[in-house]
Length: 114
Ligand code: AMP
Ligand code: ZN
Image 1 (cartoon, helix red, strand yellow):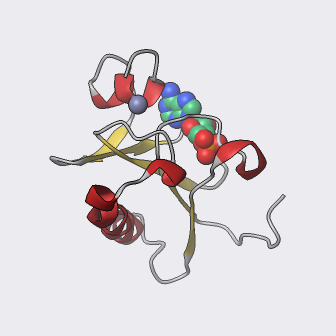
Image 2: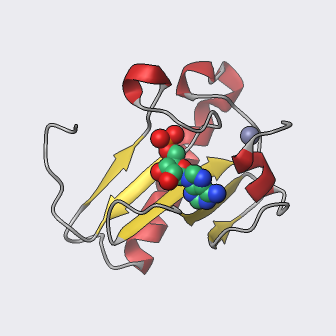
């Protein structure tokens, strides 16, 4: 999709620090990390948000979670724990309109979130 920064990253038109890629997903380090480990997992296919997922996309989020598990193991945060986040819309705090799963770890998170 034109003007989508995550599509630009997926298509390698914009530089990023990619930590995983496969046929359907790309994962890269967040440019403004909120934790020692902060990776974004995005589908290659442009989907605006979690609220725009369709029946055909039902396996996608499971695959995103399985990649998050692998990233957690690789970064040794799988035992201490981590947080998975999907922001949606204004109240959810979504700033990039291309579906993404945040995995954050390496420090103790607080609850409730801000
Ligand atoms: P959200 O607020 O859930 O939409 O998250 C968007 C995330 O994308 C934020 O954590 C940003 O720091 C991150 N971000 C924005 N631009 C880039 C970029 N070019 N490379 C890596 N991460 C980015
Ligand atoms: Zn996009």
